[in-house]
Length: 296
Image (tube, rainbow, N blue to C red; front, side, top):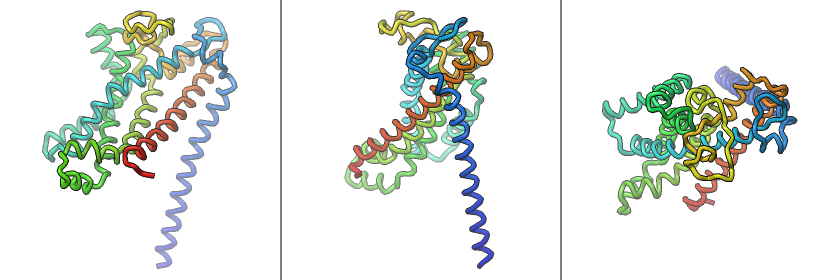
């Protein structure tokens, strides 16, 4: 008995040590990036376009491109993932077709980002002649989002006790009505968490976007909101270098005098943006959960 208790205590201490190491590594990485990058961040840096050959450039267009690609990717992938997650969790029968769908999802989730980027490059950029564009980048990023979001939504729905579904059916509600009005609100916090995780991956992705959205950010007119105009920031067919691609490009071929400062500042902005997005989305998820389920 004493030996069992001793082994349990040792195992708990090892688990705590591993958890502490993970936290310390995360704090070290974030601290290093923020300490080296935050001093280079200023209002001018955030709202000024970049410069290719001279010092003093900013990242305004890259910031917009990153958020625009993120929103567009979520608009495409979330409805598809939601429908697929609901089907797999509540409607799909246990047969070979369902097993095949799950296997395809697993394969998609394990594909390297470079492979996905090259595939979209060959199909959309070359064959369909879309060119390097925001649309091509969003299509590539959708491939990343679909498997992660689908599995998360499925697991979040499955985590809701089946008694909820049985109770709704007993009250005379249809299965679809029960799922949308009772089960989905209950599963909302888990779904929001999945959206956060996928959004973080999309926001920090670089490899796939190099071959799809491109490595340039043409000048845009933020007063022109005509989506069909080439100078409009909303134009889906224009190249769009994101923050992550900008960091890679500066470190690989940047020739401006302050390349290191711009790289460090951009990295800090990328980290801060992801942190703010994650915290805001988590708050929104909890708020929606209380609102839709009348929880206090």
